[in-house]
Image 1: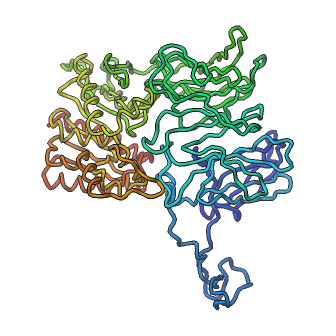
Image 2: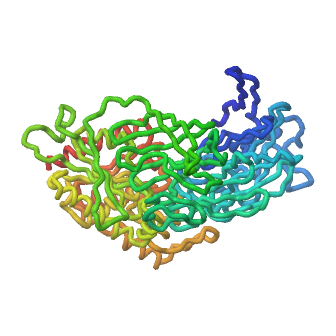
Image 3: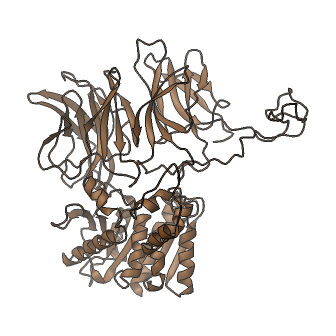
Length: 640
């Protein structure tokens, strides 16, 4: 934090070897997945990492310099009118400068910092104009006199855009030689996650569709450092593969749906004794309604599943070291458990195999789950999580006396281009413990079903998703898995938007509706959100990052027709709004306007605003209070 002491500590064999003070060199360290970095040079003599740019000097007392030194001009303007003025702040301090939006509020832009461990020399590297660097690594250039680094550079000209959860931002993969001001862009588009191969021959990275949906299918590319050429290794998959197929010279597994992951692991390389290749990559990907672990042998050109797609669990790899892997596994009933894998290589046929060893299972809760889908729709499905039988805990909403069916919560995900998987969610687990069945809807446009499914949702955000949510709820009712007379709704962000639409379109279907930071007026959000492009892209309009699109009357009209705000006079069912006061993705002003209009119409609406909390409502107090508020609200709704 600002004003705190910052140090780089070097530890060896459990002992603190060196402590280097970097407080006056830069601001806070970046540790997030977008910009955060920490990499050792090949000779282990230097490190490179990301940190906030140094803070510009603030105003001091008259007659003193900004840094408090004795060498100043006594507050007088020098002959050079553009020079410094004693007691006056650095002219750059108050210059209007955008940031990277949600979760990055108040943070200064990142810079790359190189520390020589031996000499304790610290260098802040300059960045190319209009480029914000992150995800930096040293390149293995043993024959070069100067070390080189490779990093992702996020591009910005007029302004920066919100970047968390957004893989479609303009960016490039850059190589730079330390001590030089020259930067080479080896690939441009919407790219991220450069990882240098153990052989030192190349770099792999991810590329996603530029603009449009904020997340979609990624392709994996390989850049040959010697030949200075890039090629696609795993392509974008339009629809799930029917059988094993070889595409772009890589053999892909049966049913493969494409790559869906935010970043590759920081330590993604396996070293397996006896393997013909030592460039074996391990990473996670969403596969329909679960998360799976995959290995990619770059030499054998083969992608293989290393965790099951059996609708029983969700699995992720944390990283690899030699032939060992660390990962986590979870289910809707069990929080994440650590697992360790050991990789082996079979030569005939060539195949990477991972044997996983999991922690002992904890006692299983009174929670069951199943996949529910419509056989005619292969681009969507739902996860139904439910209490297996009535118990003392479920007495609040499902008791043994006179209640044949469980009450049902319909709970689609936000995004809209994300996915609810078979992993553990404490909110869902808590609601099931109270006696609810919870229907987690992965509608068309969710990740893990192929690129065609992602694109099918564009321009249909107010129709296709609505229809599929209602079809999923009705299917659950028809299978006697949920009480049609005790069905409620829970949604946030985009699924808060669909919930607000449903409140006006199907009054009476839901006994109560809870909306967390919902999009209420797309046009209003376009003017204040950190991701204005979302408002254009999701209704099927193009957005120009370099020349921000004008909110014309025609564009606003299109947004208004798709907005829940136009249906405010149709709302009849009890509604609870839960808002984060510091939300920059969907700022609360439009939801508060909606709340006031509903109050004026005497609609049964409540609203809570959590100070200092952003879009996810993820502070301890906000999570605790919102859970209790949701339970009490549903109980009250059922009594009406």
